[in-house]
Image (tube, rainbow, N blue to C red; front, side, top):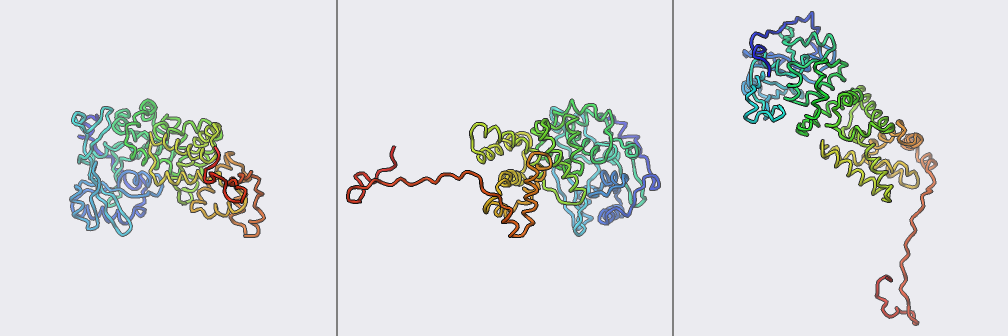
Length: 447
């Protein structure tokens, strides 16, 4: 645990606006009003964490979190449009029109003896953590130095307890306290380290990085909901391609997407997965929406294909083989990181559409165009074409077909060369000499 001296004489370094460079005008009006109200009523209040970090880096924060010495009940009393949320640690959501800011009370110190009464498990992971404390304790309880920064809009000063501003200037990611202990308290911090390093082009400090590979197995003890939440943040960070490469370098991929390593071990599978991640990063960079279901479908597609080939090799018809392969892969994934049903349904639809893109005769292309998930399936096909997983001409054909007029479409249709199933004739019942049914004519088929 942290030594007591960190909670006693530790004093923040007060950094003026001229040194940190934060533009106060970039802070949302809701966050400013919330802080002003709390300060006017005698409480300390700061913009904290990721928003301060991103403002110093010259990035636009996605949201603004506020830390205060007011309790959740005191915060709630000061804002008519607010509500207390959370069980593990209570927070207050303050609403200003369409905007919501999250207000947390300074968190206190976790004591070593708390492992004896169920607040931490046998691996050191904290299970219950609802202790209020002082600002210095709150700063020390945060994970990385660059997240332990407090900005006061009134004075335009940054309060820095652990050298976070200096680390930002050096583009260095450093844990507060002993890295092994901090990872044991919350193994998700290992994934966060990779995400911050990849998305902010920051180098992980040597001491912070050293225990990661050895402690990667601790992720198996993290609740799946938290694991999935962090994985989605990583994949939707706009730097997913680099983040996944770093996950593999650190040995962290086994605990989050157990089938990803096998896919990345094969040339075509790796090209496809990296093309999908690069495409996702481009869309996010351009401000376009991204579907988590589409992304998970891409990450697991190489395994679906592999299982599909195995089942077809055993004599199973192609379409039933594909559906069984889908079930197998989703079941294997669910054993480690269950994907929510809403994303799983999207994945299955995208996968099931892929063989239909090869059917370019008759009415089938027209019916596929009307599929509600056609665009997602088509984008998936383009990724396959670009990575060598599918014929590039197939992707080009569908690009022309969907934008062509009716006459041009009819001319583009491919002759149906597939062998048609032989129509089964009904066996006529034998007839008697007079044209009527033979004796026993109500019997079933022979044999």
